[in-house]
Image 1: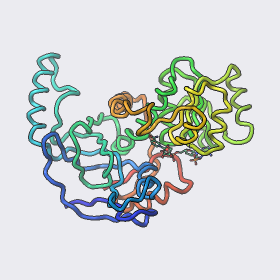
Image 2: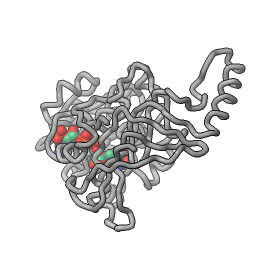
Image 3: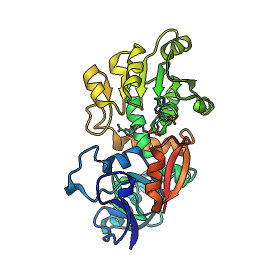
Length: 331
Ligand SMILES: NC(=O)c1ccc[n+]([C@@H]2O[C@H](COP(=O)([O-])OP(=O)(O)OC[C@H]3O[C@@H](n4cnc5c(N)ncnc54)[C@H](OP(=O)(O)O)[C@@H]3O)[C@@H](O)[C@H]2O)c1
């Protein structure tokens, strides 16, 4: 038996409850991971809020897309895949082990669950776990894939490359901070729009910070008099979208991760599940993120930790003004 957090009705965080449940034994291609930390994302509460529909057939909603932990059981065929692949890799490379080897009991991993990560143990496909680099702490590892995947997606869709001037709105948020680091790593000059309290932090990531609000276009023009090549919006409010469009970048290089209707209406790009721009890329972003984090080129900053059983409190706090950094749940 293990604790799992579910929403048994649609509504606010008060509908979350902690249940005890047994996991089935892992089948072919599956593994069980004992979670050490679980990443909290805004979409977790949006899923049971009713915003995406409130069909009772979808209950209970199982929030949580990602985490980090230790593999405690593997399905029967994982062991076969493991020995075959390790042997052939070792034979090919002459080195022990490889990133392609199967999943083993005891592996420290980063796991993408899609749903249901708010649990002491999760049952997932072996394809959805990646080895956690030793240097990446459990908490940061737990928050890497969802916001990070969105950021890779957005920066790629915006065509960010060497010498570009890129403006990122919400630059100190979960998606924004990764987008800033990626754009800087890929050679762009990054202007990060964020409230002043985040400016020192943004400078440490290599961005030039700018405060939002009245006069923003003029402030950005002073920093980048030759204009802006690409814009990424991680906020989505109408007035923020207006500010994005006012910067004059080509519409195919203006990307939002939130304002899907505005993107459709105004002819710029939205990335997210189900959009044309990003369907192909999410699983492919994961090894890129883990590799960058393992090499110390990408940090995910954790702001608060809550016990797993206080997921509702974490969701309330995330919906209020809160300190910078990702939230994690700890079983
Ligand atoms: N399309 C996708 O696939 C996808 C995937 C993941 C997330 N998302 C969405 O992306 C959005 C951002 O997610 P997140 O995890 O990055 O959230 P987050 O960590 O809460 O970050 C949001 C950031 O936006 C800033 N902000 C909000 N309103 C602002 C304004 N008017 N002016 C300037 N800054 C403002 C916040 O700053 P303060 O701290 O100063 O308030 C915060 O730094 C959410 O709506 C989420 O649902 C989409």
